Image (cartoon, rainbow, N blue to C red; front, side):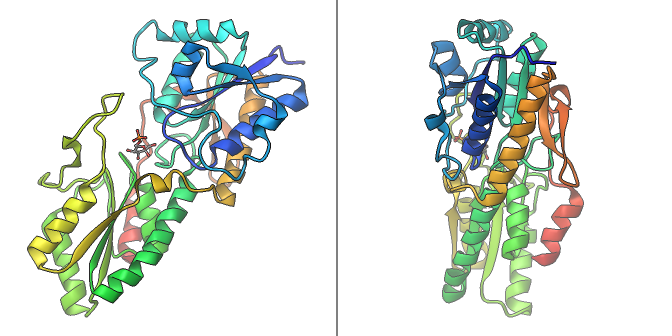
Length: 347
Ligand code: F6P
């Protein structure tokens, strides 16, 4: 049966993540091949409302697969927080005669897709967040590059840690889930990994460092900490600062606080390196480009088959399946205890 869809909108929303351009490229190319018009929505949901929307041509998506960022630009938006907002978005989509939408984004973006789909607009999701905390997919676009960046940083910082006999603290992203910290800890051989899923005791961290130093004779250590990690006594609280447009605390700083505490308590030299946006702006490694391509290709299939309200999710074994957005939204994929233990064992 021929699809009734003639114009597909593509939107990128939330924090940028390596591999996003690969998603845009394949969606647009699938459209060109099927004689469908791909329309780019620039600057995310706010751009949709203000009419920052145009038809994409082949040159728009040529030579972008290897680049970080998103050629459609991205933003965090307050659209969809009010009851009338899905209708506002539908009206804006109707203005450009768009009859389907692919939403490339993380938890907030897929919550918006779900609302739009519930209001009757054909909408499918492609999971994209370096935090990898989206339910319904084994991995999200951007995550693998972020892990690679963090692992490379650990490899490099080891030289300084060793040369100066320091405790090097490395802060990585991960607001609610410590996937980057755990995978980089395993791959990069960090001695301690601290993640949001497991509140830690500062005394325990000091003791582990002391044992490594005094008993095992290691004169340096590497600690990786996710930005959302917190000690049980809430002494290292990085949530006290400013808030973002969504009202969420801006994170960043917990690693520096930890390094200060280590110096204060143990008297050893300790420094923090916060990787921050360097994890998001790196050129996508090949596995991220491939994942982006496979997920986005399927997302177009779902849309053309009239299967809205789903997200393309990577399942164990490497397959991709349509996951209902209602099973994705409002949940968080956190690090399992077993996986965390791996990081602890190899630490
Ligand atoms: O995309 C998720 C994330 O990487 C979080 O780990 C981090 O807290 C957040 O982005 C920061 O994003 P921004 O400062 O761009 O809003």
